[in-house]
Image: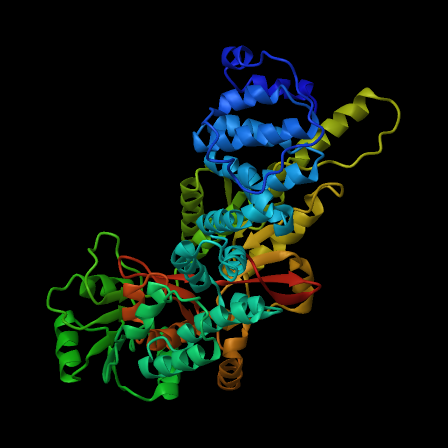
Length: 610
């Protein structure tokens, strides 16, 4: 880059200052000074970034690029971030390999300092560590991992942190790096942890094994202590003289709930009895695997006073239920309810959080939040949300919009439909193929010769999030596929578990190819539940999917009791259940992270998303 190529940068700086500092003859060194670190000798006097920038104009070729790089680093130190961004962006055109490698860290720092989210993600995703100067690699990894964590891209952050912590340069920074690594590993699904094991070295396997055993034995202190002792023998010195992260150590010391008598409140009579029975079967199935507590099932369709009396008579030391929302609200507000309780529905936002009261719901709104997070991680900027006009679908749509705006985006386009007859016109309106047809028709009327052309669809949409039932989804997806222009990029379509049905036949699957959706692990038959799923299907071969979900809820509710106390103290602690990855938030509500699946080549397949 010659000095003439510096001219665009002048518009980003203070012209008078720069021009006043550019006098003097040009020097043309035969080679650029060598630079192995981020700073020059401490014996040199401090010179401001803008003066360094002006002085770079005295040089040519690689030497000029070196001095510009020096100015960019000084600009970052002075928090003159716009100047740093202008210089580093210009140097991306440099043809000198040494400059390119030394540029990567300042460029990343400039992007982060000026909140260039899209460029930051692209730089991290497209830069191999070998493209970064050796001395800059640890800091590049650390900043990248921190950024990916903030963007909820836990899998990618874990990969970088495993790489960073096994070759420490700054030992004082290791505890902080270990803590962030543990935070990211705790956020991964079981299948993501398994995927990281493929080709992993001994160091990475040690961390992955610790994350997996902490889940496997959470709520089982004796088994956890024994497994941890075995882990220490197998991976001695893994943390290189530093203790494990505090969050990991606390898992080993907290005493979990170990109830001997559990009262279960379910609507065993009335119109919800079938739903209650499905939850009951799930609880009994989980209890049969542990067989360490006495269960008393109580019909919740009674006044609170009667329930208090019956729970007391059962001498219960923990309560699961009730299931129905109005009963949950009544009991959670009662002052004479002394038992620790896991309610099987959501907490009323107006109810104050209380100690030892937990809320477990199969919240569809959690799925909408998860989808918004995925879109943010994928750097989508113009998604469209289409929902059926049902109450639950509209609530999910509003949750997505709210979460999307929290990420700093404008309200996305969103539409509703009432019936399948609305879908064709809605898609044409959305993709603007109707306008394209009108334009083609006008051209044909103006030109006598025959015009051969296809209508074109919009190109500014990143993705579609469809919130609809299985029948509506099977109608919608083919409409989109045939409406998108053949020359346009494929438009990804996402859906929620409301769109998924295990009873989809082969013809319907062809219509759904390319659809990605969220679903609980139980209905995807993931590896950790294969045996239980086979046993379940032998007994309940034709059971309704709603009841299948409630069975999984009951199973998880019983298994959760042993981990609630740990999760309350350690927000990063995760329970891997049939209904998803469950975390406990500050008000005692369990938040679900579901698995991802897609239809590909006429088959349903699990999918690893960020």
